[in-house]
Image (cartoon, rainbow, N blue to C red; front, side):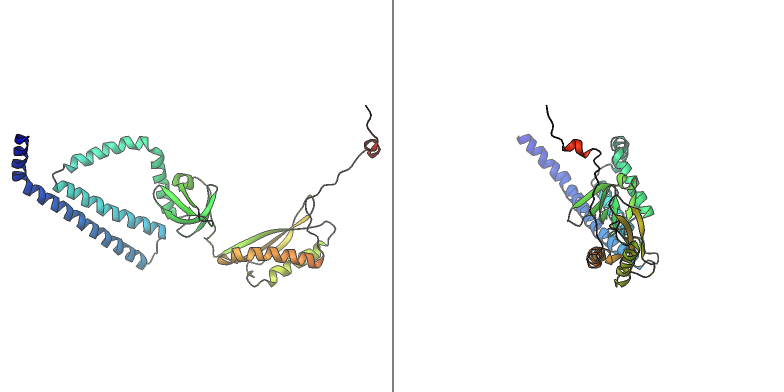
Amino acid sequence: MQNLWTMLSNWLVQHGPLLIRNITIFIAILLVGWILANVVDRALNSAIKRSRYQPSPLFGQFVVNVARKTVWIIAIVLGLDNLGVDTAALIAGLGATGIILGFALKDTLSNFASGAMILLYSPFDVGDFIEVAGESGTVRDLTLVNTVLHTGDRKVITLPNSKVWGSAIVNYDTSDIRRIDLVAGIAYGDDVDRAKEIFSEILAEHPKILEDPAPVVRINELGGSSVNFDVRGFVNREDFWDVRPELLRQLKVRCDEEGLEIPFPQQDIWVRNADALAEPQTE
């Protein structure tokens, strides 16, 4: 133990000052890297806001994150090189390891490629309400691996980008207006012309239904128990969820006031031999 302590003491005397110097420089490099990363973050955000072309928030967020992490990686490599670590061999080793991991993580690489395609073509952006892969919600974040949705009931849905890019994407916020599609059924004995007139009045009198494109009321089908009308009107996107229930209520109230029956599903049963059914069964 005495020999070991002597050897350790001698090593610290010879190499201690250099080691302390290198560690100090390493910490200083990381500190400078952290400062530069924040500077790059603020500079890129400012440049994106002032840009004439105004890229999508998702693309801007992606560029800022990549630049920030790149600065950090450069700072770490320079710091390790100052400590005496052979960074060239380390990078070469990481490259070989990356090839091996590439085969093992092919699904993750597929998500990475899909995330790049989403950023390139921008089928949706942060804040858009979308429906994709059987899920719907508001886009809150996009990484190169996952797309994060927030639902109206405060659930968080994380979807792999390969599943998002490989599915049909319905973006409800691309247009400034949306169409409300309702189906109103009346009884076969009611006056279809009067019903069409009433439904048209409801759309025309509502202050938030747009005149252009014009509302549409027409017979859609002769159903099993009702004559079904398509009742359609366009509204501003932000009014959709308020106007739709209002129209449903007005349709019900006006049908009651005008004596139009809203039938429920029903069936007519025909008995071919009623007398036979009425006779008591004997063994």
